[in-house]
Image 1 (cartoon, rainbow, N blue to C red):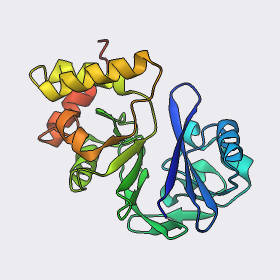
Image 2 (cartoon, helix red, strand yellow):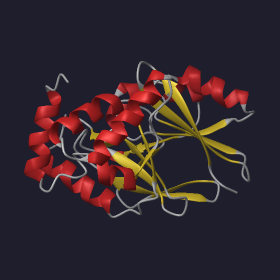
Image 3 (cartoon, one colour):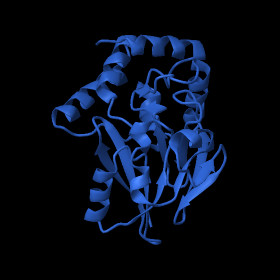
Image 4 (cartoon, one colour):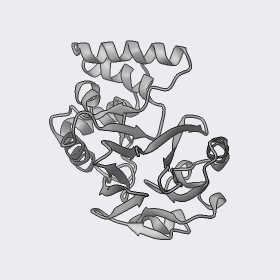
Length: 239
């Protein structure tokens, strides 16, 4: 049976995720910055949360961990910052919900131990705060070289891979993308779509690898140097 994925808005602009496998009746929460909306969403569906997975240590992704009282899987490099971690994972490890298996990818830069969870058979990836729709995470602990390497790895995935990221940043990311690629028609069309979605109060994520290949200026950067230049510009961009 297909993996069920539910988007749950938390805090001001975060997204956390509920994953449910009906065959095993198990439910995973990814990046619970606030437990209460996730508990409500799970209860509304008759689901019981059985695991918590974290992509990185930032409080807006882990503050709700303890509320669930279930095993927590998180980056081994960041376990000390997160607190109680039952399983620390590293590059190449496999984690699972029922029969659905995800490979752990180490994707440093936003934080140094940041990981993504890639369900290859399901064509799904959870990228936390590394790859956003039309953007990438700030380089708080890493370098442009780190983030460029991440983008190269993401670019190897099939275009129809669905990308679930950690924030609703697409509108501001899109305005920046138009600024740095003013002749990119795909970017302009995507921003019009995003503006319409936000005007209706609708989310702009998930996205896909194929869409990011066409419209994301960080994904499209031709070198670590260019990605770094774009990241510095984005950090102070007021458009």
